[in-house]
Image 1 (cartoon, rainbow, N blue to C red):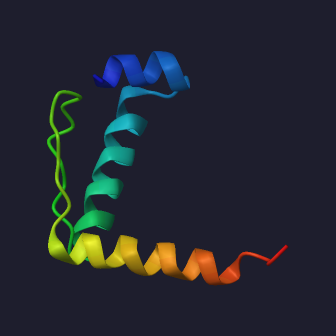
Image 2: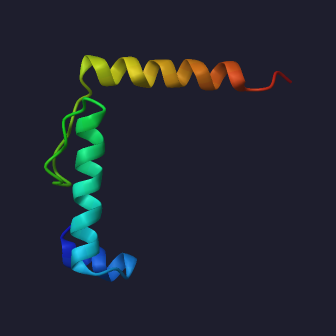
Length: 68
């Protein structure tokens, strides 16, 4: 999605969209994740570290679910 499409869909300025993208990329880097190119056609497979994070999150959410 282009910055112009983001502005249209979210009603924010191009500068705000660019800032949001930069903050998201910085957040990914701080967590040790590789930022994607932003292409909707790109398929990004998780790294081993990302897989472990997802597995841990899934396990944690299952243990928090109330038993019926």
